[in-house]
Each structure stands twice: as structure tokens, then as C-alpha cells.
Image (cartoon, rainbow, N blue to C red; front, side, top):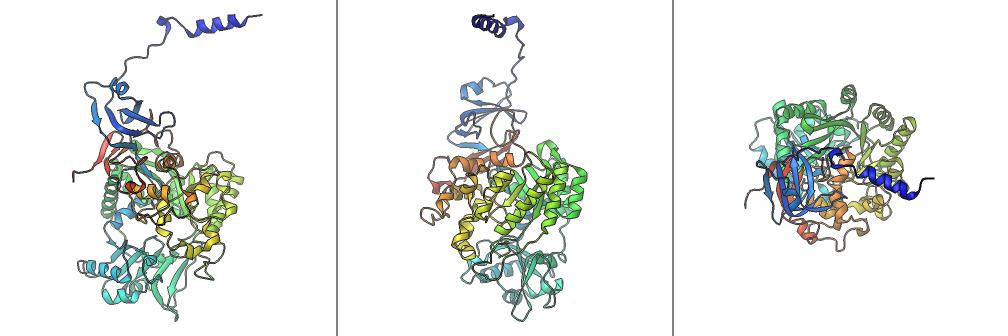
Length: 563
């Protein structure tokens, strides 16, 4: 019998091979870039906080101490000493509409308008500068901010701008306000029926008030002149420049149509698409067929485009009372919201996606919509059992208590927007009542089941600034600190979770965790430089934090100018 000592001796001899027999690791190549800073949060569980990291060929090759990083310095190595600044992995917005953001930058900005009169005034000022007959487009009105919270009507807008068509999108994107000229061009009258999944808001006599909700918007958009290819490219480029200002190096981009994707690829081929865009292809039949024929494609154009996800809509939005609820709205008895897509179509698309290697991401806000989407996903997974599918529900805003654990049980990711909570909290109780509000914006309840929550802004619905969402996540308060102690504060996130929600968790939600989401060797050298340490400063200082620099693959794409 061999003794334990003999075994240990044999192992020792095997492990301690002669120097001449050890493999030669070869020369250590110098880094292209070495970054040092007082605070570097890597979001890498193995080395969560370091003082330096090194970059070669656009990838992180080392994280650790300054002394160790400097061992990789060569004659051509650039040094970036950021002093007291804070470095975090490049911020990724898990739900941002890139083209729409760029287009709204060119439209009448109605966000924050305190009254309908203010909306009309802003539109009138733009109309004076517009060409005769040109459509006037605007975005961002929100009747919930006004003293009269009812939907506006076309009459004041029509009196102010009688000779040009006007179309103003509500802040949530789920309602459209038209003036009389636009209603006439669209042919919308008292005799026009409500389309499936849509509602024409009407006066008591049946005439349209000018507000179109959800699928009814298509009655107007079909007569609006589409943007030219040049206008699309310009809008996309403006949006990319805008998100860089807020520290974003990547986005998840819902409902991208074939023409929009073609514009993205044209810009990427020309080296003008400096963003990592996880595309969610529009889920209508034509775009879906094109995506399935093309098949999943990853890291195109040097890691600029990923095409492996599909986007569908189940319902509308809470602010415009289009979110589909299990019981009627507390402030609108008889109204249970709108289902904008047949549940059978969602289930069939989920099955097709599983068979073709695509991820499905479905918009669902109301508790009824969330339940129906979870049911559709479950049926699809029963038909095509699949591990690690990472199907998503976008928003997951209002959930029945019974449905909270189903996300983890089915492997479904809730992709949520923390800033929606602070935007909606002043009126959400009116819509839902005390009982249902317990399952609304329920971040902690979901996290406790074992899921992760990738954070997005839903821009242009909310501002791109990710510090608004970080602040909302850790406080459940608005910028003024209201309400004291936070709105249902038990649902808050920790700072570590909030940071993961805009870095590591979006990477996981996009199957990109091996190349992005943290500053770790082998991953993209995407990082954001902040002037405040958001992990330690007082909560109110989070909102004062400025982005000093945005770096993608080791290349600076934004640098803040000196004040």
C-alpha cells in the first residue's frame, strides 16, 4: 500500500518541475493606457476597488495597485491620472430609444411644462419659425403635472396654431395630442371607430378631443411625413453625442425597425457609431421575419451592434391609463386599460424566438399585462424547454403579489426604470389605490426572489442622466428630498446594487457579461469618470454629480469642458 507520505512526495515532485521544463510565458507586452484614480469601482467581485488598471487593444488587461500597473508601462503607454475623480465601468442604459431620443432633441421640448397654456405657448413660438404647412412635432407634455389633470383638448391648440398640423407626444410616448388641422389630415371624426388596442378620447357628443391613446396613434402617424434617411442619421448621431455626455457607453435599444437598423449599420461602417447598442428588433411581422432570416449576430462592427433580441408591447402606460389592470383604475371606474397585442401573438413569437436563438423582451406595465406575458412565456418554455433564455419584461411596473415570484421561477428578467417611480409617485396612488400600490415599483420585493434588475431611463420618456435613477434607487425620493424617508422606502436598493443595475446587470441581461459590465481583465475598456464618489457622498450630492469623461474601448468619446 502506498503511504500518504509517498503520494505527497510524488505530487510535490510533479508540481515543482525543473525551471528548464516550465513553459515560457513570453515577453510581457506593454499597455496602451494606464489609468489611475483615487476611487475605481470595478464592479468585479474578485477585485471590487482598485487604484489603477491597464488597457491594451481596447481591453482591460490588469486591475490592481498603481505600482503593479506601472510594470506594464512602455515607451508608448499613455498615462491617465484622474486624481480625486471616481471611475466606474461604462454606464449602460438598459432601455433607451436611440432614434426617438435624437428626434425629440429636434422637436418642441414640452417636458416640465407646468400647464397646458405653457405647452401652447412653446408650440406657438416654434410655429412662427416653421415653414408653411410643415408639421409641428413636440414631446413631453404630462397632464399629471398640471392643476387640471384631465387630458387636454385640441381647442386651445387649434386656436393658437390653426394653419399647420400639430402632433404632440405625451411624456410616456403612449398618447398623442393633435390640433384640428392634424385631425382633419388624418381623417379622424366622430364616426371613426376606436382601433383594437387603442382609444380615441372624445367629447360627450362623440367628436374627437384630439388625444389618441396607444394603437389609435397610428391613425395620425400614418399620414405624417416620414423622416428622410439623412434626418434619421442626423438624429442618431445627435443622440449618441447626447448619451456620451451622461457617461453612457452602451444602451439596450427597444423597437428598432429595419430602416433604423440600416442607418445604424451605415454609421457603424463609417466609424461613426461610438456606442455599444443591444438592438431589440421591432416585433411586427415584417421586421420579425427579417430578423429571423438574418439570425442572431453579435459584436458587429468592432462591438458596436448586437442583434439577438425582439421587442413586443403588451399594454400601454399608467399615466395615460392604458396600462392593462386586473381591476379597474381607482380614478376611472370601468377602465381596465388596453391590451395592444394579442396574447397569442406574444406566445407564438416567444416560441419562435426560443427556436431561433433570440431573446424576447415585452413591454408590460399593468398587473394584467404582466400576468399575461408571464403566462405566454411559461407556455412557450413548456413548448421549447430552454435553459438560460433570459427573456425579459420591460418595465414590470405593477405586479400582483402572486406574480412576484414567477420572474425568478421562470428565469425572466424584470428590466425596470427607477426614475419612473419618482416621476409617478405623486399620482400613482390615485390610479391604483392602497392595495395595488404595494406591488408597484417593487424593486426590493423582486430582488429578494433572486432576480437582477437592469436599470434604464426609457429616454426620451425620462432624462438620460443616470444619476437621477441612481438617486431614486437609493432614496425613493425626488430631487427636493420628498417624501421624507422615501416613498415606500422598504423597496430601496443599496448603492452597490444601484451601481450593478447600470453596469453588470445590463451586461447580463444582454448576454454580454463576458465582455462588458465590469472593469476586469479581458473585458472592454469602457469606463465613466465622475467628479463625485457616488458610493459615499450624501444622497443629495449624487444629483450634483457631473460626468468628466466617457471612454469606450480606451478611446475618449466625451470630455467635459472647463466651466
